[in-house]
Image (cartoon, rainbow, N blue to C red):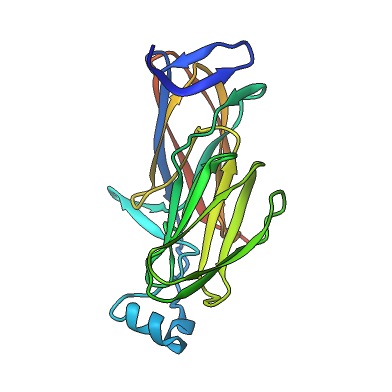
Length: 242
């Protein structure tokens, strides 16, 4: 029997891909958009200044996209926050990859399951020093001397907004969201997301963005997913009001 996500429930019931549902949607942005600021520190580093020549070199703290006529918000974590209690899911063995390209973490935001490998790569011909100080997991501070070097990290406990930084290049910032299940997504360049293989049931869906000055009108929503079902949902962000 072919299984979707190899989802192991407390009652030893396996959810097959044939009986699972899918959730998709958009994270929109309405109202005044804050202006993305250039990363001025890049100019002081010879390698990064050359590698980033001709690029916008804007902060990724907030990135906007378009979906049709609507502005959208990129790099939002969308995840199941309630409804999976007492269910256990085996972490994938395939690593999630985050690279260092032109003195930036690419992608800027990733999700990974607790127990799943995170592979950190360096594609730059310069020294990077990857460091993180998690709240719930073991911290690290590792040098990556040049292109082609790799690190593998495994986080044992769920933890949202785990920050990756570089000691050598202090403007570099990426985020890793560690979850105890595989039902999450990060919005793409058009603000869209898709979560596949949800077992039938009722769930609370939450959104999370790194920048505290943009807020969701409603950060949670309740949905019901049936067998072989497809549901759509949208969230809306705006600037935090004083």
